[in-house]
Length: 324
Image 1: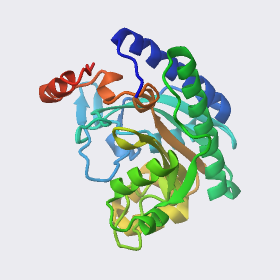
Image 2 (image 1 turned 30 degrees about the vertical axis):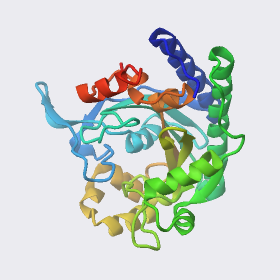
Image 3 (image 1 turned 180 degrees about the vertical axis):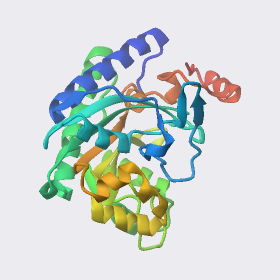
């Protein structure tokens, strides 16, 4: 697997990947860049609670009466921002999101520090379809491929992504590999196709198990998915999670499934139920994940400055890999 050895040259390549992708993806989707918060008020209900088990980092401030939370993602905040900023149907925004996830289990692709391009676009009721979702996925995937080709030209790192991305539901994946775990299935299917958009994540499958957890109050579980690619040493490698967001019916149905009815009292959820907030599609695209994959790195710490145990650093150092 060809990659860059020099840490200085790696930094130059990271800059190219992030700049080129941001420029092309925002232009393709017609998105306006906006500023985003690092923390939000706990009482607003706009923080992403992920699978519902992760501990949010909360703190107080000397000149603020309401408890604050470090964001875990901006899935709900972006939808509120589209309404507040006066965006119209067909328009969208993106931002450079930085979050802290204290309970993230660290490995080669996961860090406590999450950095991604978070984006959201207003859609019509008629656009809440699988076809609309797939069309957007194809646009994002083609942008990733174009940046990969530029990395190959500039730094000599071989482009490996296939020309097309394969679409599959989590139920179809379970049916294909019933004896494997969710992650093993993802590795098997990405090894076969190279790039897969795995759809319908969050609800229970025929086996009674979930493929993966998703919060009940942002993605519509029937209209979402992950862009997965194959990393030769890691296996399935997630670059993006995205989807069409819940409308009133989907929110009520999914909240009934999880039993989190108390969330419906938050201002954000009231905005969805009253249909004050616009219908949207959105997602997050990992910045360090993108750089790691396109530069053929073995650990996210090669492209992101974060904290790693000394044991992890030593283990990778012995393999000639230096973490930032």
